Length: 192
Image 1 (cartoon, rainbow, N blue to C red):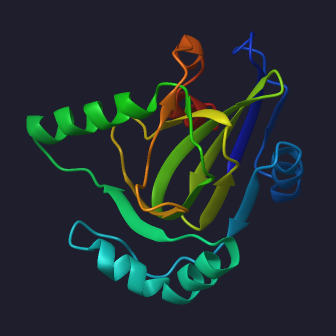
Image 2: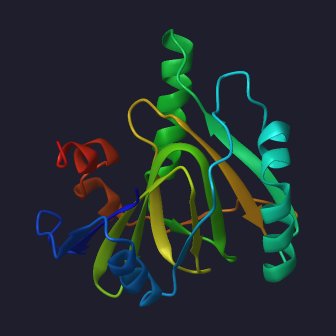
């Protein structure tokens, strides 16, 4: 189930809202122009599951969304736990890339078919941490400052949608704001 935690941009230890209530989450996100929807989860994902298989499972939804929002490119981003130092290094490098605040010239649209990841949306003087889980489809408007945390041991499979053929292009702001906010693992640990 999705988790939303809202904090002032200048006080990351102050929680203005923390909820798993879908109606509250939808209302808070809609106020920022962010859209959260849910698709049914189809099957389990293992290390052997390919991007092509995931796309085939969700073909009807993918095609409908692409037609509705004029999305031209679809791919799968997937990081599943492995053992060994090479995987740990790859995972740490991937995590570090997305932990810096950035924005895009087009909407960022992601469907989580498996696992967990957190989008931090920096808007209107606040930071909204949206922990997405399997079944969540998040659409973040172009120009929204944000960052993403996949956790210290990433495990997710996400279908990514793009308006342009060049795919993911980040405009990094250089603002160190992301360094002061709780990471995905801390957000989830607060529920325990």
